[in-house]
Image 1 (spheres, rainbow, N blue to C red):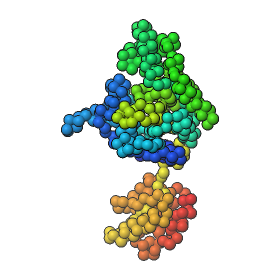
Image 2: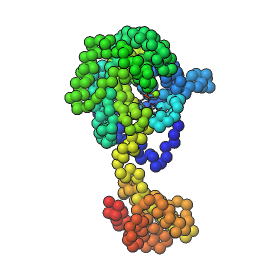
Image 3: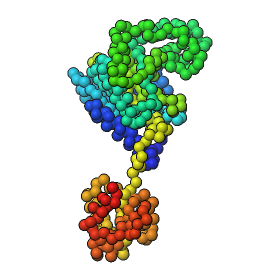
Image 4: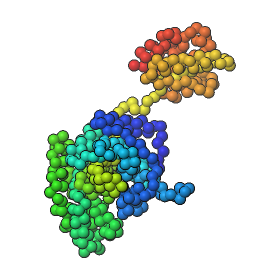
Length: 419
Ligand code: ATP
Ligand code: MG
């Protein structure tokens, strides 16, 4: 679980605001829900046999003995919140959320135990049009972030749950008969979650899969038509993609369309955004059958990628512009005066970053602090300046002589100097 230090915050703020801006432009609204939920919600929503539920959840009993879990993802919570507040009744929704998620994983680059996602969920849209809309929104996001050339879109269709069931038994029968060639994880998954074997990293397992039955042959005409329309819409929008028939995703609730945006720039943790259709989940969680499509992006991986590709805009770390020193002779008058000037400047120059010196000390010491703050200009105020209604201006970055400016002219002077 990482701390985020002030030097890292500007990149995060830039990423978050860019994503939020694009979501707003497409008409998506923000929803916030708690970090803790009843464990039951995730077990029912995500599926007992998934990695998340089997081994990644932070679960504990609270003081009344109720089992709670830190949310490992947002989708189940989002559905719970929407149901609870009647947002899915006779209406459609385009929603997003952001925040920390928690999974007990082996920490490594791009894989943390507390990580952050921005998730997007839509409800009440059953067709490929919403899928194309969300994927196109993401393509625009990557373009605006300057990483479009470094991420690839992979798409696949998992078909309906009936198709998957038929496929699953044939796949299991085939793999059972070659069980000794499967890696250990895949052998375990044979009984718990066999479709996950398709995206196993083991080479021998992947070789074995070359001759395995393929899900494509089990799809209903309807699923095929749905997927074809999605591809046509993406073509029309100029969004390129790769069909990866082994893309299955880790969670149980997906059906038909699934997708991932992958990069080769981050090593093994290359998926920066993943999602799909989950028409069965709302009902599974106790609601009326409701179509749903969504995704989540991994913010740590995106921040890493922005840094790796050197596409963060310059000047994100906003230094201080003006540092105001106050040299009082022991009474409060200069301090009060300087304090008032700082507040007036903040009112008249809202885009200028102004720091007031706190903690007293010698003139030399205050100027040292001013320099260290990164400010361009020090405004020097002492008893003489107070009496004369002026301030002294020292340029901290340019080699220009100190100047005396009247209080009336100060805002205009600073504005001109800093522009
Ligand atoms: P992976 O295969 O990498 O474990 P996942 O299928 O478990 O991913 P999802 O549950 O789909 O991941 O979450 C969506 C995105 O959130 C991922 O594509 C990734 O960018 C990010 N993510 C997931 N788990 C972590 C983690 N432990 N640390 C950092 N980012 C993560
Ligand atoms: Mg995972």
